[in-house]
Length: 490
Image 1 (cartoon, rainbow, N blue to C red):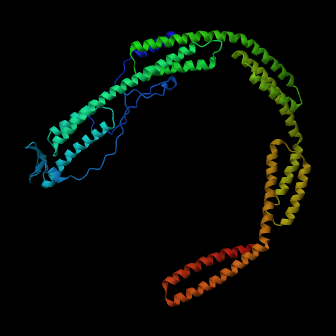
Image 2 (cartoon, rainbow, N blue to C red):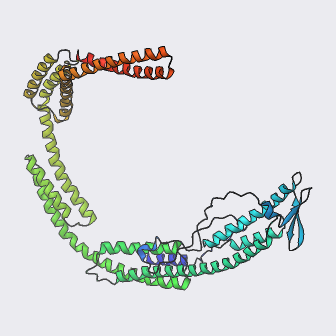
Image 3 (tube, rainbow, N blue to C red):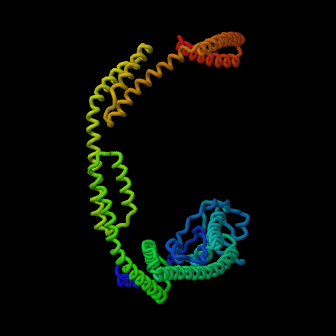
């Protein structure tokens, strides 16, 4: 983007007037209280500019509050402000006069009065909710309309209740809303002050960067920061609070001038940088020559270490121009590829040489796998030892087959080892003795429980019968498990 384009784009955005939040066309009487607009920060910074809150002219949408359960109508209280006739007609008593509010046919007098009293309580609930919104300092955009709407509802004389008290609450609400509106205007002005300070901070930092000594400036860091400031500026023009055409144009001229000075200094720096590219190119040419000399070496370990050293030097060398640096890297990488390809060919030759060893070990592996499942443990152990001896004599196999061959033999070894351990467990005299003792004790316990069960059955004691039966079943299950364990030792 050219400077003239940036100017046109920015100036065009500054001419757009701020659009205030639109008021609702109908009064809202059931909105939940919203949080007040936060107080402005006294010291804004460009870094925090992009994350600053929106201007209070566009508040967030209200969140509906849970509606409290409606209590039962107090007929005694309702009777102070209205009465009902037998045919369901209901009248409002207000300032010594009666006003018909409607009819509730087919119901008792209490039901009819309660119906219109509940309508009044619904209005009071809306008044209470509006009071809560004012107390919470919610945005006042629709509050005056809500007060007007509630007054109209009370004036329609379609409910029964203390109308004068409700109207007095609305008068108090009207005054509170006016005070809250004034506070909102003050908050708006404070937010504008924050916005102006943030814009001025952007301009001041850009001017400070442009004023740095070109010989000492860190161009990469400063260029990135200048670009960030420009992005902050564009974001402010797009979504920030409007400050007025004259103010924004004056700030933009200062910001544009700072960027122009900075760009002039930067171009001079990169012109000097071109002179340094030649030295960087010479340095990398020498590294390429050393890499090309190593390309035909067959001292694989030494040459690989030298290539790692050359690579470290390459990474620490200054960059030439992008075009030269890419071409130099291609030559350096080509020498490396030639060496490592030759080393791979040598490894492949070794793998081919070890191919005969692979055939021997595959045959030994088949012989070992034939030992499973184990029938004679001692004979199997002797046969496996013979296989191991011949396995060591066979020598190395190709690298790609080492894991497969070794894993196959290891599975057979693990199976023989497990069988040996199981055999020891089965023949362990201490474990056999413990099992035999537990078996004897449990058999004696079961015999006693059977006697208890017979006695309980004879006595007709159902509780003891159930208890003895449950205990006997549990011991018999234990006996079955111990008998299985004893069978393993046989």
